[in-house]
Every structure is written in C-alpha cells, then in structure tokens.
Length: 173
Image (cartoon, rainbow, N blue to C red; front, side, top):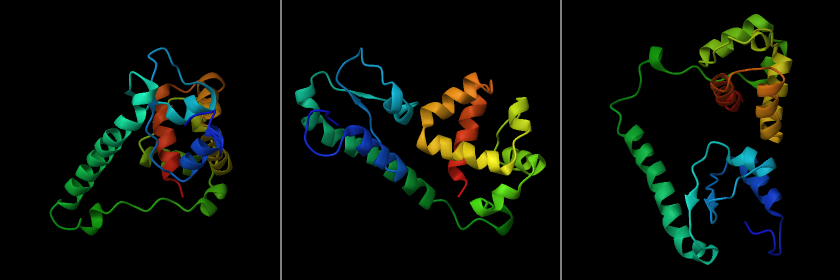
C-alpha cells in the first residue's frame, strides 16, 4: 500500500481487508520501520517479509503470496485427510449467537471464558457481563490498538490472557 498512489487511502484498504477477514501479509522494505497507530494494530503479531528495495516488491510479491497460500493449502489438506468424521461427543459446540450474549451475567461470561481457554486471573475479567463482552469485541474489531492498550494499561490484563481473549472474541458470532 503506497500512500502516494491514487485511489483509496491505505488505511481504508487495510481496514476494509481486516473487516472482511482477508489475509494481510506485511512486507517491509526498511529494517528500521516500526508499524504504529492503526497499522500497528492490524499487523500486530504478524511476521513481516523483508524486501531489500521497494522497487523489488512487485517481483517478490508473487512468491510471497504463493508461499503464504501454500502453507494455508497444506493445513487445509492435512485437516481434510483426517480419518472419518468426529463422533458426536467430539464435535465442537457452536459459538454462541451475539444476540444471546447481552443477557449473560458474570458467571455465564466466566463459563464462556473458561470454555475458550481464557485465564481469568485478572479481577476485571472476572466481573465482565455479556454487554461488556460485546463492547470489548466491538473495540477489538474497530480499534484493535485501543483494545490491546486498554487491556494492558486500564485493566492490567497480562498479554497472554489478552491474546486468548482476543481469539475467543473473534469466534463469537
């Protein structure tokens, strides 16, 4: 994404890709570059591909895309090759529908957090109700950097717990 080319702004493109759950593949042309702001939020935790010169990006991009999707294809093939369908007791429970969540009390939220492997060592997580849980999901989607910053600074939730919570919130439909 180049800020000086015509068309949609990079932030709009990146936000749209993120909202559509499209794969984002970060590419760096400078070792010194540190993503911050909205870009830092969207690319947090992703592995960057390093290309030494900006003019080489078009040449290298095809191989990066092929590599990224080959890994994804291999994973899908491994899952497809698994023997037989799971027995009924092994089938995962479908995620709750968002319309159910606002009525949850803190006990129901705690059960959901535990079922999603989210550790609740933090007092703030232990008192969440369903409405607050949905607001956290909205914050994660619309302003991921603010979500992570608030969890760290305001609620003092350890990063490993925040990562588990973010993964669980993404599954909530």
